[in-house]
Image (cartoon, rainbow, N blue to C red; front, side):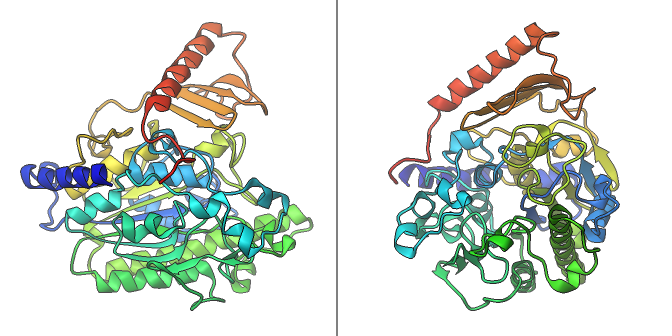
Length: 470
């Protein structure tokens, strides 16, 4: 913690020394922009109207895309929840920040039922993101922002790992990977927290509605000062229920499910429930954006929406191959929308190769905040590019999880996995159907070499975890 406190001290000094980035980019408001970061959970690439899905009802997110910029080639740092979210909030590869794995016991996915005594000793309960990491919330708080998170944390359950110890002022949400949407339990064990304390006060309330209600109160209470609202919904993640019939699908309120026709098969009904959960989340996001406008804050609020990884149960990742948990495009390329009135062109479609690692430096730049020079960030500031500049975009990105590896360099994509491997030209083959390894052996060799160099750098990085003593 000494190193972390030193770095935060460096940040404070940098804030005093730097000239405001807002002045450089011509922000017409005197106050720093409010920031709203919305993350959906396991949402497919194709599962928004603005991404071409005419069967799903998402008018509010479609309007956000019409008023902002929609990304077509946006990637996250992992195909599963925990490392993806750690990369988002620290601006660093999960392999660098020590959170490249899930904090869980694999037996639960095989239907194994925990008892309370055993559950309390599993890795899911005792691990978390390395405490030396500096979260974006900590930097923004030093700069005068009030920070709130309402929804899924998933970066550690012990008190020292919780959001209030990482720069957030308010927290209402659950601390692990998934819950039952109504009981707020994970396989029968309570998971909801209010700030630093467990709570069952709102048991029975649909989680999406509950997180939205808490977020609206946060907006009301902090409308007079800069705020950072982090809203990581658990929709449309499959439910973590003791009932196996619920665990295999997504939960949504009956009144929203009725917007979609009953299916004839289990898969069709899973898709129905999934779409209903997305629609309910879309309605909630509409409520958030409406409240921002009612407070007269719309023109000075930067809004980001993305999914944490590719789609799971009930989702549609087309035209991409694969899904959550895989390094095919369907596991790591996700929908992303950014809106900032007067700063970013409305209705634009951005086809640059960019990633969630870019959001950390981009949001700090928008706020006019410096990041510590002593912390290695793996992304870059997108604002100059989004504002019409010709700055260089990302050239390469790497992924690793257990036995799976992948790299993208330019338009080339390389995947190595026991479940399938190959070399693909994404410009011509977005669905990764044609393996060009035999035709392009030199390209394949260079991709492997680049991945090995990145892997070596990550293995030398600190922290390296998560299985370490805190």
